[in-house]
Length: 369
Image (cartoon, rainbow, N blue to C red; front, top):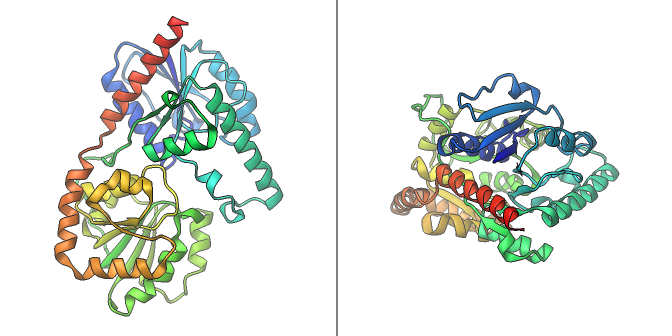
């Protein structure tokens, strides 16, 4: 079987992490099938696979673009694929091959706000319309839909009236991409940590509002935010007082640096209003960092009893929960112990193996028709 994987988001966070883990572990697991990995130019010229059944193909086409709709179907078709895996909702309308699609979350559907765009509102409205059209068609035509939690599966079934057996849940994981030792850095201890992007649904404004209230009781406390310094982070920085030296925007960091930030934090704070899985929480648990997270169905599903929860719409409850965590060393240690156990339930290798089974089942299904 010849399988294509659209990996144009290779270097992105979230979906990129998923793609890199999938390819890495599939190479270890599958020596039988052939793979074609579609990459943007900057990755195509850097990535070289040692396995003879794996090849790369340049596909220097931006996602979420008209060019994606017009050019990618032809690029896919030129490789005579038996199956294509598009690990993101943006499936071009005229994709010719049978395909599997991964839906990570429905955040765009649930947070229709102009704050989540850098575009003028009329253009943003058109892009949202395009998103709905593309997603609806992608779900309808897919052979199999993979999603990363039972929570997202239920949302898909409810909103799009899909057959339940068409949607398969394959969990992600929190194992970091490096086994290197932590890199020592100059950290402003003690500190709370946030890891992720600064899109509006991440609810960082509420975390910034809660922080001065925490400082009343913990005057030496710092807040460290790690994430690519894009438009949304730059906008957030402008909301912070110029003399707020206790709030550190660390930007993008290496994996080795990230290990240090996790290991030495008092807690990871995850105040998001919506999520599909929650990789940073499991990363933190793996490295002995207690997790304080929004009380969302997806987090109670993935983190279980290994996190402390709060109402993400209630600043006072966030402050109260963090205060209890910072004061109660016994509770923090219990969360650390439970986190080690919880994080071991998930692995990227298991994710890749389950995805390979989906590929093989899809081919078997087609052969029976």
